[in-house]
Image (cartoon, rainbow, N blue to C red; front, side, top):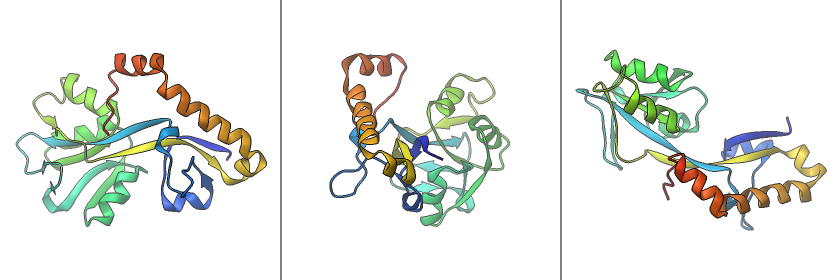
Length: 181
């Protein structure tokens, strides 16, 4: 594999990949493809809550999508991620059944479903604050980077430049993309 589009930085991924970095080795958010938020969804009438600091979930169980970084973050904080769901719609459906009270899902898709889809209106609500935010990168395999580091650095630089362009920002705004930082 030469690259992954839209991947979050994680220590275990650094063994086989590179992302744009600052001189001190930290990730460079200025050259990320985009920022995404892990949004908290609560079953209306359930016992889950999120105030921006404390997450309450019955049995410490939280629905998350398979393979998303938030599952690992929750595990590290003592929660039990129920991570067998593939789509945001499936996760939201699980909330409506009453088996679970909290889901943490990434992206605008889940938010749009909760606000617009009649299956979820009045049954699921989105918490005001995101659980976390994450920068997503063009993650490049170490081999691909080593073959032509100047080319990869130029691509990352171009990504950062385009994201700062006024036209690009206007397109993001028109699409309803929020910046959380």
